[in-house]
Length: 122
Figure 1: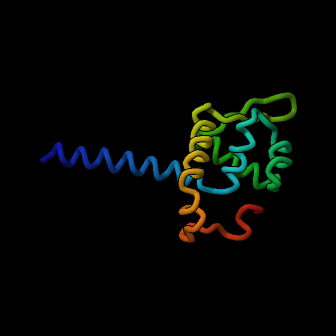
Figure 2 (figure 1 turned 90 degrees about the vertical axis):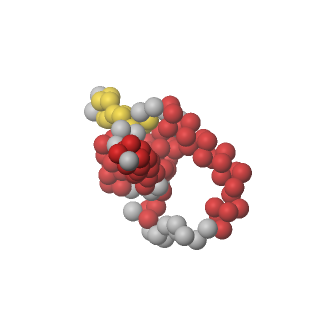
């Protein structure tokens, strides 16, 4: 009986961990930043230019992505250059695109997770 409870706890912990990860990248701004960084390391003003997000928004989301270990930074003169922490993150984003190509009709029709109109440009 104790083993069953331990197995359930392990499954719940793994599920919670994955859910937390997906909630972290579910934000349109963070996804836009990750997409921009897939091309290579960038400084904040370059990310702003590629994503059309505001500088404060980019900086805030970079802090979040960095704290979660998805993005790393390195000083480059007077700038800080950001990069995706693992090529597996870029692979995941690419795999998601391939999956969406296969099931896009259902995802596009889904109204359960509509973003705020202003969410992307905050």
